[in-house]
Image 1 (spheres, protein in one colour):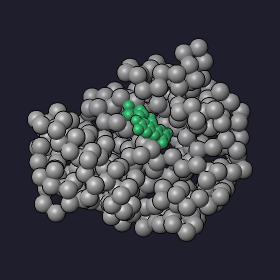
Image 2 (image 1 turned 180 degrees about the vertical axis):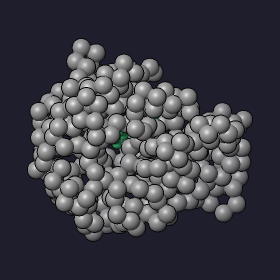
Image 3 (image 1 turned 90 degrees about the vertical axis):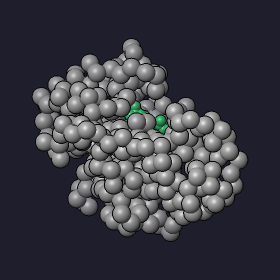
Image 4 (image 1 turned 60 degrees about the horizontal axis):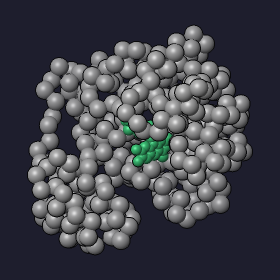
Length: 327
Ligand SMILES: Cc1cc2nc3c(=O)[nH]c(=O)nc-3n(C[C@H](O)[C@H](O)[C@H](O)COP(=O)(O)O)c2cc1C
């Protein structure tokens, strides 16, 4: 039973790059999703964007997430990603599939009608799916969409929208059980997930359903699975705790879940920093690693001072010595 639990790492811009995804995969995560990638940037063969289109040695199945609002450009973006990309993209393995972002609440994104802006234009969202499906079919890869409960409390439309998108050809719908207006505030709308499951099971039973939002324990994951989800997606719960996947699998199997020691946490923060630096160079790698390490240090004695010192570190050597890890 527990091997059948489909645990997915949620896409998180600035966090779910190759090094982090690889660590999650090693710890029981069945599938990871990349940071969101702009379809327009792929169209222009943007150099910086190429670094998002990478799959490293040792990663598990990686789904690439794209965002945009133009069906033709979205189809082109999927085609580029599924055929090895362009200069600067690098794949140690084939991508597992394509995911479309219909949930990002950031104004810069929604003001173009991208991300959760698409929750307001379900017909356009369906057209995008219709355009991307043939590309995914051509390469034998699934297409998933990631939606929110709705734009705001007065326009909850995830159940109807999920049916439209499945009818347009989406193989999977992942629901972040909050509206765009709710952002990331605590509390999720499980009743919307229940309605979406009922609507999809009635009309499109083959469409996979993944629940997302505030999963921090095996209990949270089991709640969504028992409601009828095929899998669950974990985001912030994995930042600083990539062991969450194995902890959920162990708890679900009736075993005592693994509890990392402080040394394990410092050592994982150091490994992540090392691998991010190897991928992106020391300047960018150290800057990106500061915030990530802070998640690993949460709740430790002396963590405030350590965080402060990490924020001033410029080299990997300094970074590791603050974490008290030998190079
Ligand atoms: C820092 C951060 C970056 C995110 N970036 C993306 C993204 O690129 N694409 C996306 O669909 N969702 C993104 N999300 C939303 C997450 O995928 C997820 O839906 C949300 O955090 C709720 O799940 P959680 O409660 O397990 O964190 C992001 C969330 C966070 C906190």
